[in-house]
Image (tube, rainbow, N blue to C red; front, top):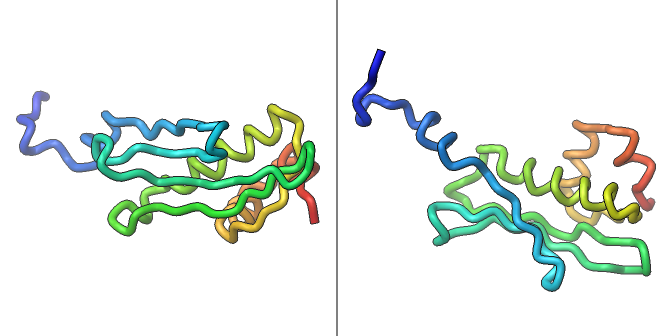
Length: 113
């Protein structure tokens, strides 16, 4: 059954723009562009040792909170830690919460106290 564009529920429109996380290694950040490119969500990290990163801060603009965007950033950052075989220190409370909710062994074994 065909719908006219005006009757498409909001969720469907949003899904046509999948959340894509970009990793800027030079600036040590993961970003998700929102609303074209006007806004962005960001996760900042810093190397605190040769093989240790500190996942410092996750920021999602107020208008985009509650949509699971921070989850995508947290997952991308943790997957980066796993792929690069690094250790991670979690300064960011949100990433601490994400790991509690997703206690995958490959995440847990790389956490620094």
